Image 1: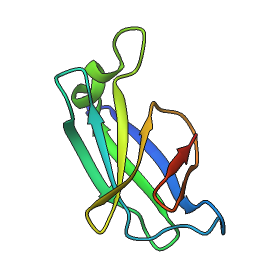
Image 2: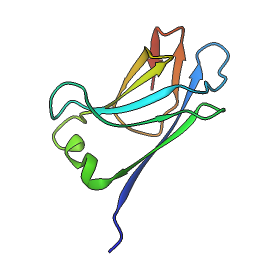
Image 3: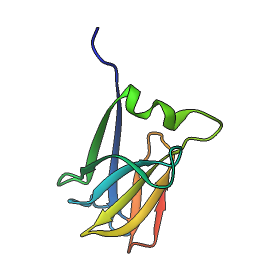
Length: 102
């Protein structure tokens, strides 16, 4: 039987220009198993797009309970520029490292 997977797609863009931001590190984390449990990370492509692919077993615990424990850290050149909670089909918009909108 093939392993089932969960795909999360997103895009990181500049708040003012709406242009995609390349080379942003997107880290998926879970707070269910303690603070900042790193699950997986990817880097945005030249258009600011990314895709995370998880075996369902790796993230099933992150979705149990009333609130999702999955969140994302966005880093540029090692500096945290945003933290985004939850899932969904959303565009992540970052402006000057100050905010992120879903």
